[in-house]
Length: 461
Image (cartoon, rainbow, N blue to C red; front, top):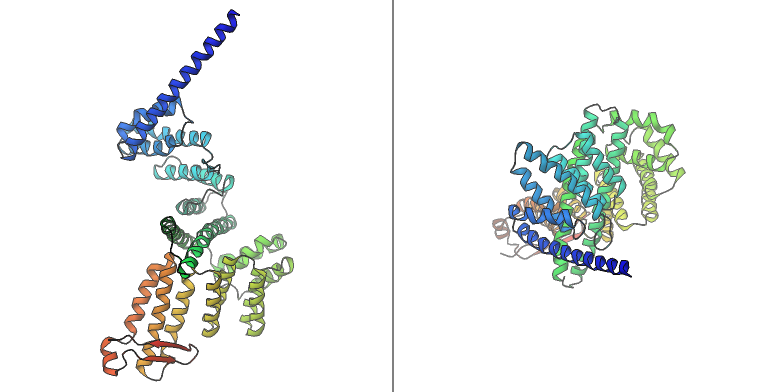
């Protein structure tokens, strides 16, 4: 009986101590968070340190704000003190993973945290390229779903590229291209997610259904992320450009063709790279495409067969394959991407009417495809001198071109600057107010013949 009494007494005492400890942790949590919010990191440090030491799993703010606090001390310290804070920062990420590998909603964030850790290692030089790459690689392979940072994905590839240039024995030209394809596909996946969300909002606006405040905010966020993705993907492409030449690609793919001719992923990536680098005139491209289509008839293989027939001058068969490509594709964004690629091919062969037709088809599947509107604008501008009976009417075509460029700017943040500059350039080539007055054509409707077959209303002055 006495033992039971002592046990109960100890239990009550321990629960009381735990309650007091938790209460103190919550108090210090509130204190350091308020200081951290206003960037008073010196005042935040001590209460933050107590919470992290005594209640490391009480709230993820320990790690979100803790990172800012430690970075402040790293930036404002030297010597041994700086080394200590740098070690503490790396330990912080490990503890973050230990206690909050998932968000409140239960979503994994291992990839996010590891990518943040790798970025800090890069920023503060807390390891060599191999060390930093290993952390990025763990994020990419362990939890790719939450590794979506455009900057992180770019640096992941850039460091791998640096290892290749430093002649690291573990990085070959072949593995470099493979890594490039993996990261590019990840970029496209992330961009596809934002695009789908933006398209829904654009359709809502087109139906004159006003966006809520939350939707307006989300739209800005999606656009900012799309711009970041587009910028970093362009930078990534610039890095690989000197290596991914036909002189490098063709021998490499020839060497590996027999080994991978039953691998649809490899065949598709090889064909895609050769197509994008204009290596499709080589016989190897034909072999890749035929092997791919025989192994796994798909939207991509049908598209490449269309391309081959286009090169042979068989436009009728080419269009049949192009259309088959669209029918085989089930994803709307991929349909739009393929349709846009077909539109580009027709533009290159100066089949402007067909090019515009496929660009419009792309827009049906992806309303936010600003590049499709830009393509149409370029088609109109390229035809200005051939459409119209007088010099005034020919130059009036630039109003049509500018209008399409403005549409591109309005729907796609990733091309907004380029589209806006393009629109200004085309408007500068259109008739001036003086020209309109001299010709006496203010407010007149001009019917453009040739392949364009559109009407233009001259601005009223």
